[in-house]
Amino acid sequence: MTEFDSQRRGPSRADNLRLTKMPQRPPRPVPGYQPPVAPPPVVQPPAVAPPAPPPAPRRRRGWLAGLVVLLLAGGGAVAYRKQSEAAARPAPAVTTASPFPAGPEPRPSAVSRSPTGKINPDGVNLALHAACTASGIESDSWLPTFACDGDPATRWSSAFEEKQWLRADLKRRWELTTVTLKWERSYAVGYRVETSLDGKSWEKLYATAKGKGGTVKIRAKGRVARFVRMFGVKRVSRYGYSLLELEIR
Image 1 (cartoon, rainbow, N blue to C red):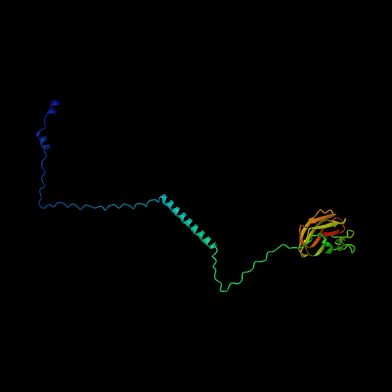
Image 2 (image 1 turned 120 degrees about the horizontal axis):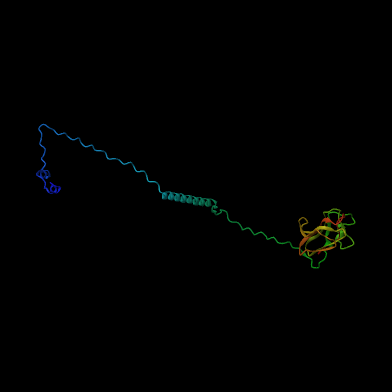
């Protein structure tokens, strides 16, 4: 038989029986036999999942927390500043009505005025009627009155010291225009001309440290004074200060 014939041959009866599905019969009961009882199934407890870890804090929460801290700090600073200002601000004055009747209002104090003096319209030499004194003299031949007598042949000569003065008391306040010094050869290199209302407090009218003697005319410009003096500071020689005349107008 060739391979071709075997392939064309049909299935046998046995093959058909094997291919035919037979109906299944129920098992026959056997007397006195007890089938084994299957154990109850083991029920596994459900697996419990471990708790999930808490979520990590987000950066946004940290930023919000920082913002809250800044706001609280700023609010505290503002509150502290308000408290400081309130403490520094003086308390409002409380005025209460006095139980006593109000007395008369005090009068305003008098406004201080510049001193006034008598005017010398004729320009006479006021030193001729003045009381002239000095800090010292060379001798009785050169008294301070000899510088206030209008005579150029007489003179006042001081003690042989640096700080010496000649003073004229005009006996009342005058409004002065000029003060004239007429020096002898023993003149002052450094000296001051001063005026006073009371003979205690002196006000400078003229001062120099380069005196050259001769006749020195000083403008008083309406200065009011009762006393006029020349105060020597430095001599030109070893002798004292020597004035021929002191004229006051």
